[in-house]
Image (tube, rainbow, N blue to C red; front, side, top):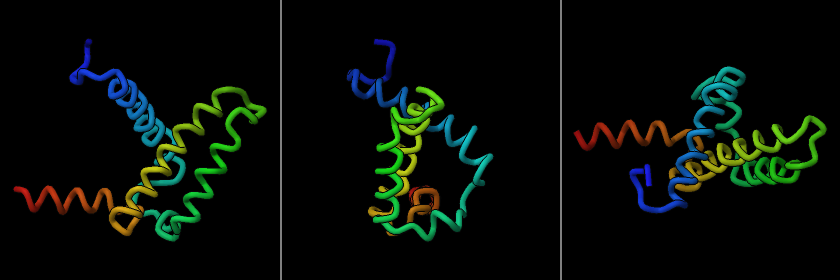
Length: 107
């Protein structure tokens, strides 16, 4: 295998996560800006769950073709990250803040 891991599932997720990063860098940040994000800061877990459900529900239903379904999968992953941060740290934007604090503590 040409990967740093021995598991194909990890390889698959690594490839997918690279696509999510490209989506964030090339679509999300240019369109909505970076953190702090006042809209994301107001989201509750229920609101984020609703966003996830909406993106999942419209996959395959867009009149613009399969590219929209692929983009919606990336949006699902990105919103899942927000939800994960909200559930884990109490703040959807805390992943960046938390990492900075963690890095400073370990140095």
